[in-house]
Image 1: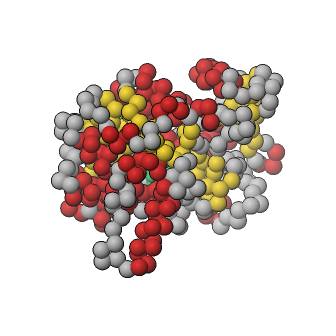
Image 2: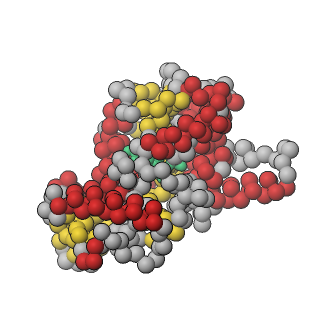
Image 3: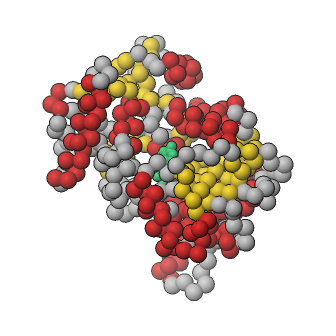
Length: 390
Ligand SMILES: C[S@@+](CC[C@H](N)C(=O)[O-])C[C@H]1O[C@@H](n2cnc3c(N)ncnc32)[C@H](O)[C@@H]1O
């Protein structure tokens, strides 16, 4: 199969990789009426065990990869998050940490170092990672940056039956496979992927998966149902959170990601949805090319997550912009200049700006804080709390 793609020049290895994954996808289509849901397509593109974007052994995160995340920009991010964790540790018996999708392992290393500095190490720092490649990378990072704490870090292949402490997920929900839906003339259809002309994939319309019915009705109430409107629904993130709520005995879940409350997410003007792809730091909106080579992502509907949380016995304790969440975690107190060159100081200021300015990551990214069985108020979550907007 050829992958018609004039924007990006691929070397032979990359072309062969994407061709192999395209053949797997095509085979999957042949087995199911010549089309698959967009969620199944995205799952294969990102998580096929051998050829999926997150499974394959290419650099993904950082300057030599396709995108950068907050913990990679600066340790200030993880240090500030650590103080939110400490607030939970003081109210929880034998707390541990469980991090989902830990990327390169940098956030885990920086958080553990900060907790050690405060004499509040957790029982265990668990990591649950979908990608075998990133799991190895995480182990390397931990052994390099905090070798004396490496025994604290344990990789899990499945969720524990029960858990107490803090669960964290930074930029994980946006990487979960989403369903795509299209509204037109008062009707709603689901978008599937089929095999098109010239060896390419194309979108086609199909009957709506019944699980999308209720959410589609909510969206229809927010838009002009006559207009053509394409968007996404992230059922995977809701199911994931419902499971976490069941295993959490006492503690908190922090979900940090780019996203909006439902009213803004499904705004009439956002009529092409929020889906984006990243390849070598170039963003575009075509997920039907570069299979297995590019990241595919969409924003998070934080209202859906807050509703799921409440339905499953969690308290929604805070909803803040990333900037406010980090300021509440003391990011400004963590800036230091002792023994630093002027160049290092300037770099630190640049990092602070990237993490907190509204035009950078400060406003588009949000932190949703969910708790269970905690008695004391978490005062850090009161700073510019926006739960009213959910
Ligand atoms: C965009 S990266 C973010 C990495 C890291 N958290 C960071 O901030 O640098 C998404 C990560 O989520 C992982 N992931 C996605 N879905 C997951 C799931 N259901 N369980 C565990 N990890 C998952 C991916 O393998 C990847 O490590």
